[in-house]
Image (cartoon, rainbow, N blue to C red; front, side, top):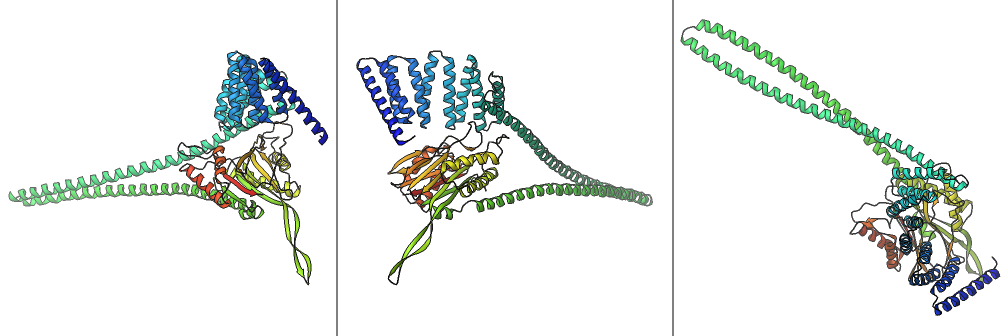
Length: 617
């Protein structure tokens, strides 16, 4: 639209608002609150169309007070619903929840079950946007029961899809698969199915996801069963070895006891023979006694020899069994050695992957060189990371210095200086090795888009990156939903501007001690795409007043800790930024590290952590 047309439209809007205000005042003066509320409502809609959400909310608030005073429940419910939409659009989710609950309560009292079901669906969507998936599921389940009572098939189908997505976020694949199946079945059963390619694509994507999940579940169950069989086999072998050892120990003890009993019996027998010999000698039967004694001794000797042979046989058997036990022990040790070798190879592979990732990502010193007044807080959860930062310089211009030679001033080329610095903080799906693979793809695509395709505007970079990720992972053909959340900035030195675009991750900036949240688009890079074309918006900030700004992944704010083991939260992180922003960049880095350490305590780190802070202007 041309400037003159814009000015004409602006003048028309102002005149329209002025007339509505006069009409509202006249109606209030006459005591006609319903008509006054009508005109206030019209003013609110004008501001809403102009995207002035603060003023739109103000006039809706005035209108809802009048409708409440007159007892007009239907109008109050409609206005509360409008206010909820505005506050949701502005990112004020608690206000949106408050007015949606008010709307639902009015519809419950008036027994309008269909509107109750629609209101609960909108309320669940707000909780889902704030990542409170557990509460979203609770609201969706309640709303689904109401929608089923009034038989609103399209709304029931929407509930199935929303529940499937929420359970997927909660890492409950069986529940998610259940609702995806219900969604696909109900969508196909609607009379208009197939008339819109978008709806049909959604259903086909859900069915593909279900098949993929079932296949993955089957593979995981097979792998788990194989692993359990292997562990059970090793445990059984170990148990058999222990039992064999115990059995051999009992046998050895029994043999030793038997040997002792026989030795005592032989001694006792020898004493009896000696007494008999003495008695026989006393009664002068010396010869007969001598013969008898020799015979007895011979028998005893033969018996002793036989006992020793049996003992030797038993000892040989025990030695054989001990050798077998040792052999089993070596076999078991061999299995343990194989497992240890596999573990060492996996660890070595991951460490090698870290070296590759470190070589691909920019060094912190290079980041500081391109953006001197900055800091990088980078804390991977595992050896390799799914979070990464990236920076590059563009549009170089020559820089000259002057020098006097023989009384004449001449210009000498000093070097080259960039007019634009583009940098980003990226949070890929997952962490560890899967996240690291995504980070490598992201770095390569950013290098191609900015350097080869020569794009420098943040919104256009995100648009191209989304299409490239979808293409690289073949997400139109598969159920792959991996992607990235990110905030990307361009420091335009020539025009003294900061340009920003975001995929879910905001920009936090502080100017003149006032903290401002520059909100991102509620869309990811890559993953599920329901709209025909994904477009990201650019926002521009003037640097005439110096600015301290931060971009980050969700690892810091989602870390559990504190006295009650809760998340740190983005609100607490914003407060921390407000408290530290006046310190040097190095001091800010150290304070963030110390705050995280104290909050985390003994809790494990749950995700990769990345925070970039920079001062401009």
